[in-house]
Image (cartoon, rainbow, N blue to C red; front, side, top):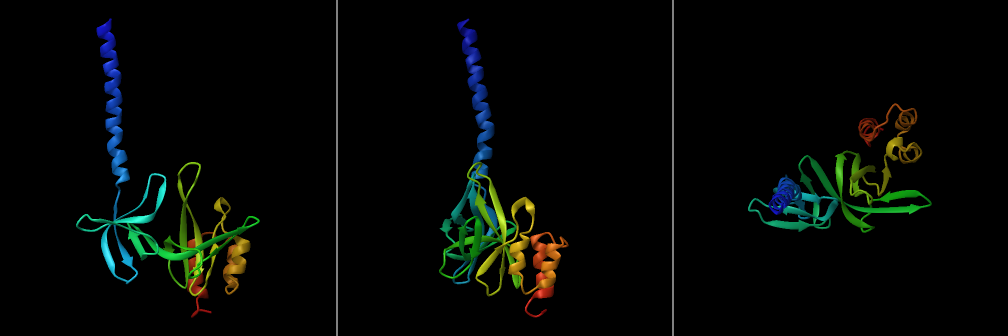
Length: 208
C-alpha cells in the first residue's frame, strides 16, 4: 500500500513537471520575442536590428533594441524619431489627452504633454495613427485611431468603438472638405483609412 501511494504521488509529481516543462518554453519564447526592424535616432541616423516593444500585458515606455552584436539598449519616445518592429512603424509625437464631462480632446503640440510612440496607419497631408493602450481588467492591448493634418496641433479621434466613425466630431474637424463630411454622414465612407484616402486625394492643399 505504501509502495502504491509512492508510485501514485510520483506519477502526479511527474505529470506536474511534465506540464510545466511543456508550458515553460512557450512562455519564455513569448517573453523574449524580438522582431526585425530599425530605430531612427534624433540625429536622423537609422540603426537596424531587432525590436521588442511589449511583453505579456505591458507596453514598454522604453523599447528594447538589439543590435547585430546582440547588445540591447532601451529607448523612450524622447530618444527617437521613430522605429519599425515587424510590419508596424511607429513615430515619436507629442501627445496630450484631455477630458471634460466625458468629452475627450487630443493634441500634438510641441512641449505639451509627453512624447509617445504612435503606430502609423497612413501618412499624407492627413495622417492616421493608432494609440495603443492596455485594458486594466484583462491586460489586453487595444488601440484607437487618431487623425492629424500636416501643420495642425489638434488631433481627432476617428471612431467611437463599435459605433463607427465619430460623425459629429469629424464634421467639425473636416470643415475644409464638405464632400468628405457628406460621405461620412451618409455612411458612404465608414472606415478611418478610407477617410484618409479620400481626403488626401480630393481635399489636400493642392486639390482644393
